[in-house]
Length: 409
Ligand code: RNT
Ligand code: ZN
Image (tube, rainbow, N blue to C red; front, side):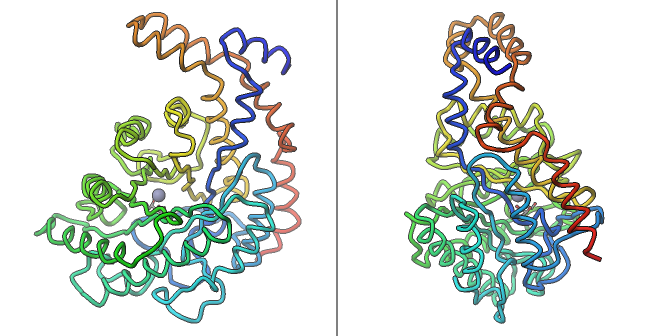
């Protein structure tokens, strides 16, 4: 089947071997928080900040050892180059609060990531599920003490990120997301944003090493309980990032449903060296469903591949489903991302771009439709074979569920 597929693609000017080789080189940063429903290990408190996991499928990882075991199992079923995306709330054995976290609280994670042969670690300050989220606000709070606590937390995270970069000899992306906003019509939309701006200025002024740490800011349109106003909106962060030479993180659940992140990626690539992503699947809202191989994901992958931006775009995953086996959720989403990248790599973009420039939109439409029925599955199978990954990951997961997860009462 692969031999046949290879020829079919060759007729379009696509080299399947080159596509497979390229795919092996594109890192995907995999979020640790799918494993435990975003609870974390530092006892911060119940999930807050307008994000929610729904479902209570048995077997949630309840501690560091269980989470590591589940990550080990999940990652063993994921083909391709992988990074681990950690939240600060996954500090191990910390007896201090989040503003005083140090590299040593993440040393166990470094050891583990090296054991798994990962490409590196990415990082996120955790400014939710904590007593210092006051009236729903963090970096934009009118309370200076609260703002300072979170500024110190972010600075601590930047130094931990430098440590990750040193350990893996490649840069660490640190993504700043805050839940700050209001449920109902605010009296002042500007002042909270000015306070956020000032807090970010103070964080960036800490003297972190820009060659090791890529700071990103993640905007959002609304959250549950914060429907009327979000301090860190798209316009706010895009302007902040542009003026301060940091990067934007686009989460495709964070826009109005008819706005597409696939269209935003090339808009940002016109101005930025780096664009970070949280790839997710919103169903009617920012629901963080498991990523699947569907149209918008394919378009996102095309924008990365055809603009030669596989190094500029930092691909991270962000979803959390507690209603199904969490390991399967992890693997299904990561494989979907990989499929979308492979699908994009198996396209003769030069030819299609030329048709667009010639304004031959008839041929462009027909060709794009033809690609949809090329034997993509056979190339995907070959990729899995080369990566020693079985197509059937479900049986492995069912076995793990029976032997390990079911025992977690
Ligand atoms: C929330 C943001 C944020 C979180 C993670 C856990 O809407 O998407 O990225 O999902 O930090
Ligand atoms: Zn996100």
